[in-house]
Amino acid sequence: MAPSGVTASDQEIVDRLLSVMETDLLSLTQQGVKEGNKVFGGAILRKDDLSLVVAGTNKEMANPLYHGEIHTMELLYQIPKESRPSPEDCIFFATHEPCTLCLSAITWGGYDNFYYLFSHEDSRDSFNIGHDLRILKEVFRLDPGGYARTNAYWTGYRIPALIESFSQSEKETFSQRISKLTQTYAELSDNYQANKEASDIPLK
Image 1 (cartoon, rainbow, N blue to C red):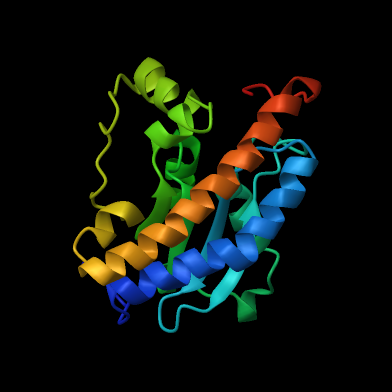
Image 2: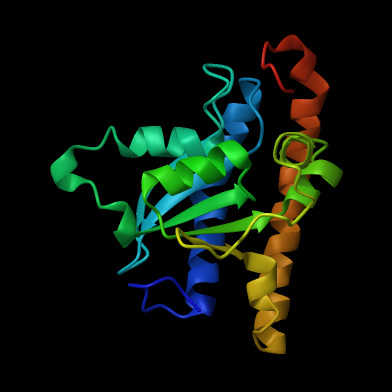
């Protein structure tokens, strides 16, 4: 079930979020990786028409707290208040399942939802960044999947899980787009991994 205030279908939401990733986030991430940052990004969209409010990417080279989601929120609050939508009127999108820092930021930021494409396991296994799962285990004593994806504050939606309920033709179409994005992000991740030792990011 979509978040309150969203009239679009799951298919429309997934299509729009993948489009934002393809046309807005990818170019930002490519530039970010060139600067030495990780591949994680975020975007905020209006619930009523799925229009993009702001997109951002990881900026840990400037500040280790500037994860993709955090930096996206930073960009949001640079928009004048009279033009800035309220969090309850927005969809929050993260390219990768938010880490503990970003889960807290989404909560404190007042969002009742977030969507993501790549899981914590993907971050560890495909992108060679295992800090999300390690912090969940070491600090919070939670095994993978141990946090509540539906709770009093928000619901987290994983795009690959959503498309499982779509028709076969829809699944094939979306799976092809996801496969292409996965390959592109894997290449960006390889670039980051090849150059990360030159950075002063605490948790590489």
